[in-house]
Image (cartoon, rainbow, N blue to C red):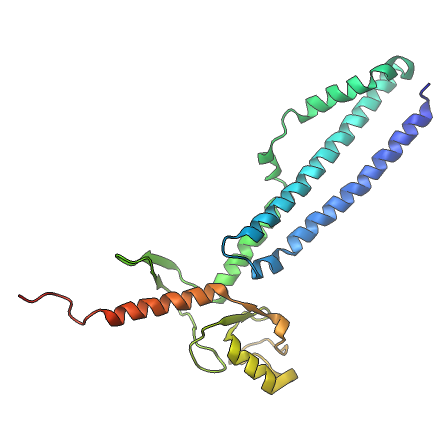
Length: 247
C-alpha cells in the first residue's frame, strides 16, 4: 500500500534531477568556452564546428527532456493528491503517460535551436570568425576570374610581409594576444634568438607580453589570401602588355 513516504522518495528523485540539470548547464557553458580553441583548429569542411553545434543541441535536448519529465511527475503527483492515493495509485502509469503525451506533443528540433545557449554559441562563432578576418585585414570582396577558378581579392590594406623578416609570408601564424601575424619560420627564429625577451616585433604594438609558442596559431585565412594574391599576380605577369590582335 503506497504511503506518504513514497512521495518523499519522489521528491528526493526530483531534487536529484535538479543536480543533473546543473551538470547539463555546466556542459553547455564548457561547449561555449571551447568554441575559441575549436575555431583556431577548424578543418576545411567545418566539421569540428558542426560537431560543436550538435553537442550543444544534445545538451539542450537533455535539458528539455529532463524538465518535461520533472513537470509531468509533479503534475501527476498533484493529481494523485487530489484524487487520493488509494484510488489513484493503480492508474499512476496511465496518468504519467497521458501527461507526457500532452507536454511532448509540440516538441521539435527546430525549437532546440532557439535555446539561449545555442544562440550564444552561434553568436560567439560568428564573432570569432569576424575577429579573425579583421585581424588579417581580410578581403572585402571576391570575384571570379574569367575562365579561371582563382579569386581576385579586392582588399583593404593587408599586410602580407612578416614584420620580423620583412619577407612575404608563406606560412603565417597569428599571435592570439595582439592579433599580429608573422611568418612561422621567421618568428621561430626570433624566439630562439630573443627567448623570454621576444616581444611582438610590430612597431607600436601595445602587447607587452613576451611571445610564447602557445600563443601562435596557424592563420589559414591569411595564407589562402596570400596564395590567391600570388596566383593573381602570376596570371597578370603571363598576360601580354597588349593582348589585342593587330591585323
